[in-house]
Amino acid sequence: MGEFDLIARIRARAGSRDDIVLGIGDDAALLAPPPGRQLVVTADTLNEGVHFPHGTSPADIGWKALAVNLSDLAAMGAEPAWCTLSLSLPQSGTAWIDGFLDGFLTLAGEHGIALVGGDTTRGPLSVSVTAMGFVDAGRALRRDGARIGDDVWVTGTLGDAAGALALLETDPAHALRARLDRPTPRVRAGLELGGLANACVDVSDGLLADLGHIASRSGVAAQVDVGALPMSDALRGALDDTTRTALQAGGGDDYELCFTAPADAHARIDAVSSQLGLRITRIGWITAGEGVHPVDADGQPWSPPRRGYDHFATS
Amino acid sequence: MGEFDLIARIRARAGSRDDIVLGIGDDAALLAPPPGRQLVVTADTLNEGVHFPHGTSPADIGWKALAVNLSDLAAMGAEPAWCTLSLSLPQSGTAWIDGFLDGFLTLAGEHGIALVGGDTTRGPLSVSVTAMGFVDAGRALRRDGARIGDDVWVTGTLGDAAGALALLETDPAHALRARLDRPTPRVRAGLELGGLANACVDVSDGLLADLGHIASRSGVAAQVDVGALPMSDALRGALDDTTRTALQAGGGDDYELCFTAPADAHARIDAVSSQLGLRITRIGWITAGEGVHPVDADGQPWSPPRRGYDHFATS
Image 1 (cartoon, rainbow over the protein chains, first blue to last red):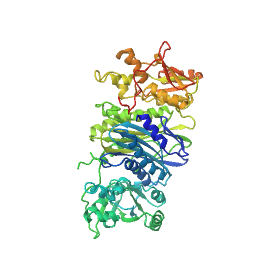
Image 2: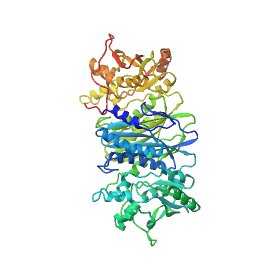
Image 3: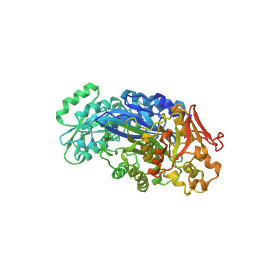
């Protein structure tokens, strides 16, 4: 299969939207942004062996490549619209690309995001996506808006993907694996939090590391009750207590939203939780100072046994 | 150097524009598109050993990664605005990234395009850029607008980059090398042609292959006078006649604009050429039919000795 055949195969399945003037097939896409709204743009790459284990199915790679970008849009409170896909492939079998598109486009369809362009090249397996969305001016969820007295919240459960990674050698098909391979971007939660949260980040590198971005960008400190971190039943049954807590606080790939909100937003956050059928848990609070300060159930400082994930860390 | 240090290094040097509400440093960028204009989006990736030779300097890689994307914006007649950069690096020395940014940001500054986000990961060397720009509604240069009776034109000279590749083993520092490593995206020409050309494509895979996209998308045939293809003095002095012609017609990496325009646009095209100090040469004409039909100086069919470049071709 040549490059042009591959592009034709992708083009035939890319979704459409009324605001796409010209999609895949020219030198660039032509798009009509909605008047008066801001454009939200993010780019994230997945490399084999770094962001997903060798042997991950093409459909799961396709899903995850889009999911991590939708998660960034969610963290801004944005409505997904368009994306581009740059795909480097060591070979180009039709089964692989069809599987990849199954995963990518299933998730795209769920969130109304259309593939409008990109590039296919020969090279080591690597998937780069740039995702675009919209937000009303002044309503974006930024990292720099946390205020002293805010509560700190997180959606869903933490540590599941890191748990699957920890079990990869001994139990690669563990139920937690779905949370590693097919993360759920919290797009609807991000949209609902647009009028409620003061600051937001998605948890991709580990809760403490990502909450650290909110603290540093906002010029505040974050206190975290490590015992309050939400845990799935699957994780509770899979690993010992110390390991679980470490993965919840420092593991990556959760793609949950961590946000801060004033105390008087509590009832409305509970309402969003009920409406979406999504657990949203208060895990800490914002104070004057700097940094992230985890404490255990006794109020004593808790030390993470490992750092937040850093793609360039020497380990 | 960790990932966050690397991002900080990039962020400190990324340009700014008044329409950037929030640049690098959050989950996504926040941008304010100009009211009433269309958004033009393209994505292209460079991989080592495929799109640039092993041993290419970091500054040249940075330049070329942006240039090939600016060339796509140019081919749409778009005004460059913003870009994202996804960078996979096997190692992360400060000298390499500083050199890369020198090349990337020098070209970005020339065209007023600002880096607003992206991603750095560990992996085989790969550079993915998504570039965004603006065009007035109805004024974009598309591939599907060529009309019977149009002339076919091309900017600059053809075959120089392919000539440098042909000389890579015997004379890697030949003067043609600059055309391979530092292509000049024809952004200003694209903007000027917005009201003149009926169809346009940038020459990245080889003239005949790229002109073939115009022909097939427009439902017409293109006749090309191979003897009229513009040639640089450097290429004329470097290779024999047969090789030169083959590289001009079928070599890739030119990043010139090939466009069609009605006969009555001739004088205005000459004026654009004078204004920009850029050679623009009439090389053929559009007829009924399909495909691209090269002819030699005697009007006889000319056969390319090699195909247009296909990243997935087995050769």
